[in-house]
Amino acid sequence: MLRAFLCLFYYECLSRFRYLHEWLYPFGFFLVVMMLFPLALTPDPHVLQQYVAGFFWISALLANFLSINHIFAADDEDGHLEQSLLSTLPFTLIIIAKLCSHWLFATAPLILITPIASLFFHLQSDALIPLICALLLGTPIFILIGSLCMALTQGLKQQGALLGIMMFILLIPVLIFGITIVQKAEAHLPILGEFAFFAGITVFAITLLPSVIAHTLRLSIDD
Amino acid sequence: MLRLLSGLATPASGDVYWQNTSIYRNAQSDYTKHMHYLSHANGLKLGLSVRQNLFLFKLLVCYEMPPEILDEKINACLVQFKLKQDTHTLVQNLSAGQKRRLALLKCFLFPKPLWILDEPLTSLDKETQALFHLALVEHLQKGGIAILSLHEAITLPNVKILEISPC
Image (cartoon, rainbow over all chains, first blue to last red):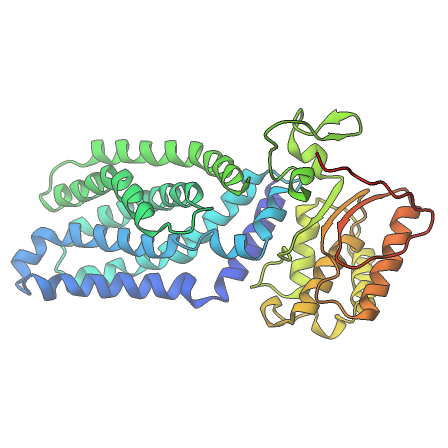
């Protein structure tokens, strides 16, 4: 089973790598949105420092929304999703491989660029590690809940607005936790409690959501 | 209807039986491991090459075979379907006919008793249609079942014609 998962993961990564819009566009979008905030508000570093946590999380959320839109679309179009459904391997395994490769390509670059971006926003160095860890815990939840919303609306013709509404409302708790962690870290308050709870949410999501997504996709493709 | 038979769509009423068991009774993979399904869409991953697609499909059908024999078989099939020169081309760069040939090739490479094919002969030239015809006859002679939807008539040896009345 593990070998099958690794092979699937490898082929998913290979096919994602060939399309720029899988990894370059969300990354570029993240940077552009981040740059818009100081332009729209004020370049004053003291003001920016107060809100930098929010900027990071909102940009990550929007970049994720951009990339999650076509997580199943390409495979649905060329019939590969149907073949995966009919395969002897468990469909949940195939979905997990797809989600892992999506995380690697769409979200890992954002986390890698965070240290550099934090310099531009004068984020305190104490808060950098908590920010990266919180993003590491939070971005899988973004992807899992985003995929669930995509799986629910897979068969529909007009999915954009409905998808956005569903996703953003479900991800508000993650956003609040993530921003609180960074703000508390900046104020040098203890953050272990929030981290533990946040990690708990992530583990809960990772355990349950892949099979839910697989089942929902099966229902969406069924006519 | 082909989607219903393959288990992708669930019927409002009625049942589908394979070897005297309803396909909805046990896990779906117990039924689908005996089956090849081909729809209008080719079921290929566009971002991968021809060879990688075949290996991915081998993974999906859990087909175990020693690598050397598999390689030989793949090469033989690719030559037969005139795809040998495109072994490492990305599927998105193939023509419609080549994609269809690749999708059909998968059926012949991994033998399964049941074939459910939706218009398998679209975008194929006369030569490839003849090849498919030969492979279909061979499959039927080995005791396989094939459910096809076609726009042109084909002749098969020892065939019984059933007329399904509209209900």
